[in-house]
Image 1 (cartoon, rainbow, N blue to C red):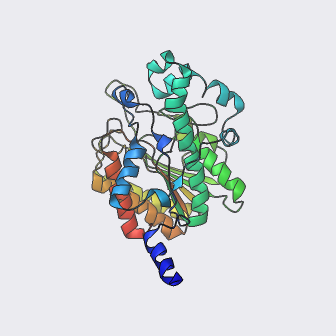
Image 2 (cartoon, rainbow, N blue to C red):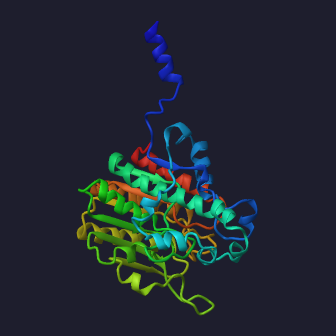
Length: 338
């Protein structure tokens, strides 16, 4: 009788001790309902992705990890106390980072609740993802990817350098994990890790990004020439690059990286702002192209035997959660993630 009861418990009650290395927190949502009408940033992209993965049956709440809020000690892996107190705590600076002047005129307690605290959860999720990937071979933060934040400053909707913190935390906890590869496929050139690891030859960076002169005469954001010099394989993309060209350039970059560097860990900045309907990316990649891109990166990590951390980074169009969930479903079909 006891044996039968045990079998029934195993069948119908979830074993919460077995968890997939997917990280999420309901507090990832930025802003409130009205804010989405004032900003191009999808305020609840992680939540949309989480719900889409639930709907597909790939995850459930009992079998993933809840992101912790980044602690002050973790923030100091990338930033000094002055940055923490006088930038993260400064409405004028935050208004510039988020390109939203309204922030200057609302009480800081509201800004802290709607923007600062959620991004600290995103950051804690990226740090946790690094630790889980070291243990399980892969991890996916449904938020994170602030690749425009570095030790001394930030921009482009990025507040703190979560990738830098995750790498430094990983190296502290896992001394054998020294060689880190960053594959940044967000549409915008990364300039955070590039500056933070400018003199570290054990960090190898591939970055594919939109590059060119905008109609107003300005260069496409961020055009950070100093940071660009640090990228090991910079791949400049013309406006409206199509799938075939994009994927061939990615394949070439990965082939070169394979012969150049042996990573102990890969951080994959999986920005979805390369999609053809994105408001800011200026690219023409289809949904199928994005799915193939993600598969190529995970296949590359598997071929090298390197753990991989995936963070979401940019993406500025409706229904992104469903699109990215389709890509993750494809990864599961190909690599048995779940």
